Structure formats: structure tokens, C-alpha cells
Length: 105
Image 1 (tube, rainbow, N blue to C red):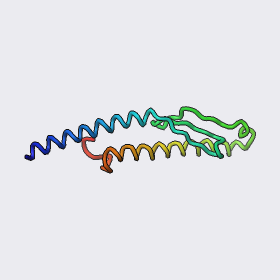
Image 2: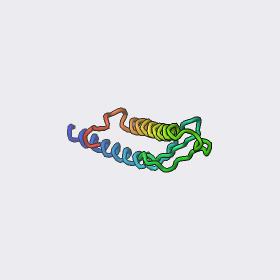
Image 3: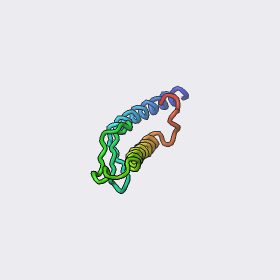
Image 4: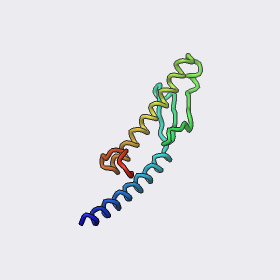
């Protein structure tokens, strides 16, 4: 009986691992936008948190350089936070809340 349960458990673990790998690929392919300054600065990152594009309202180019730099950083950080949240939600739904460091997964 133990052997049958272990086999079933290993099969379920493999299915979960496959599902997590597929979800990870989907997450890496997504694009997430972060904004600051009421949308005056927009940063788009992929799921790997790589900056894909940045859009700055031309009117901001006339403002203080430090304010613009802060807005750029804020928009990137916002997008990164969204990616973290989406990753946690999607991976958590697969593992049923199991810790991500669970052996073999």
C-alpha cells in the first residue's frame, strides 16, 4: 500500500512541477506596466523584470531632473511589485500554498 501511495505522490509532484514550469514560462512572457506622476512616466517590464520600454511625457523634460529620475524609478518599482504579486498568486494557486522551497519542486 505504501508503495502505491508513494508512486501516486511522485506522479502528483511531477504534474505540479510541470504545471509550475509552464506557469513560469507564461509569467516570463507577460508584460507589466508601472506608472508614476499620474501616468506621465510609464515603464513596461517583462516577467523577468527586464525593462522593455519607458515612455516619458515631453512636458516632464522641462521639469527638474531629479523629479524625473524619481518618477522613472517609481514607475519601474511599481511594475516590479506587480510582477511579484502576479508571480506569487499564480505559483501559489498551483502549489496550494506549499512553500516554494519544497524539495523536488
